[in-house]
Every structure is written in C-alpha cells, then in structure tokens.
Length: 192
Image 1: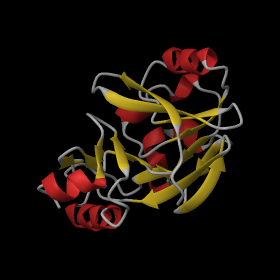
Image 2: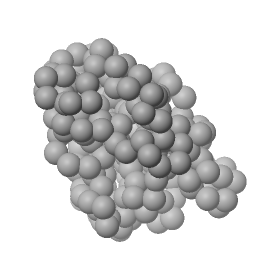
Image 3: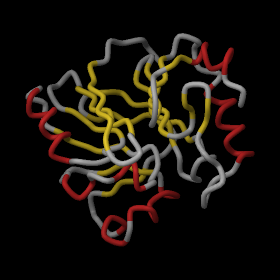
Image 4: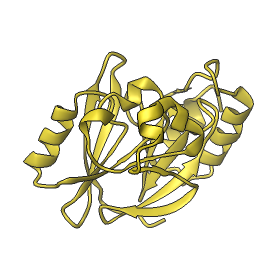
C-alpha cells in the first residue's frame, strides 16, 4: 500500500477515554472510526472542516467504541461477528454493512481492512497508507483484553503476528492511549 499524507483528527471520548478518529478524504467527505461518544462533538469537527460525514467504520462492537452511533445517520461498517454488540436496532438497520478483509473505498480513501480477531471475534484493523487504526488489538506496549466474550489469546497472537508483517514505519493509532509504530512494538511490546 502506498504511503500517503492523511488528514485526520483524533478525539478522546467516553467513560473509557476511547480514541475516535475522523478521517478526511480527498473529495471533501469524511469517515469516523470508532465513534465512542458525543455525536455532536464528532459532527462539529466535520462541519468545521466542511467535510460531511459519509460513513462509520467500527474496529469492533464494544460499547466504548459505539456510543455515538444513534446520533450519526450514515452507513455503519462492522464485521459480521461483532454485529450482535450493536443490538437489535442496528442489526436490522439497512445502513449496517459487513466489513470483510480486503480493500474498500470510502470518502475517496482506500481502506485496507485487516481481520484481527482476539479482542473480539470480529475485531478488525483499518490501514490507510502508512497509518494503522488498530482498535483494541494493538496498543502502545500492550494489547487488548482477551478474557471478555468472544476474546481469544490464541487468535490475538495470530493477529499480532499478521500486524508485525506491516512495514516498520507504519504508524499505529490505537483505540486507547498514545500512538506508536510497528517498529517500536516489535522492540518493546512484551506480547510480541
């Protein structure tokens, strides 16, 4: 995947200080990854940038990553294994679309969806150029919990090995905490 300049804004939202990322596409539209809470705050950013929101992408379905869904009236992309987390309303919603491993284009951005089960069975990471939005799969010097329903340490280890094949300079933007790089995690993350 080509390196690219990516314009985005990070908000820290909700009771668990979840990182929410608003990505601005080259065609003046935007998407949000993990709208954790306060839809009004997310929409204020897209309005300030004159970049209407066209889609939500979820790295997984845990409550702290989906808190603002009800206030965002755009298609929601989520792995089918994590749809049950969204509740009956969203499972029947015509604008809820399944994420599959591979590439999709939203807001003029080429997103590589990487299946990374372990934290949940439907966890994914989203790669855009040399940026990886890792949800709760990979943190700076840590990984997401595997002791919750749908979690698996065996799957987490397999997913982490998949991520470690990315270029060393890949910038990792996790679901919680500060950014890191694949190179730093290879050297410092005890789970690797």
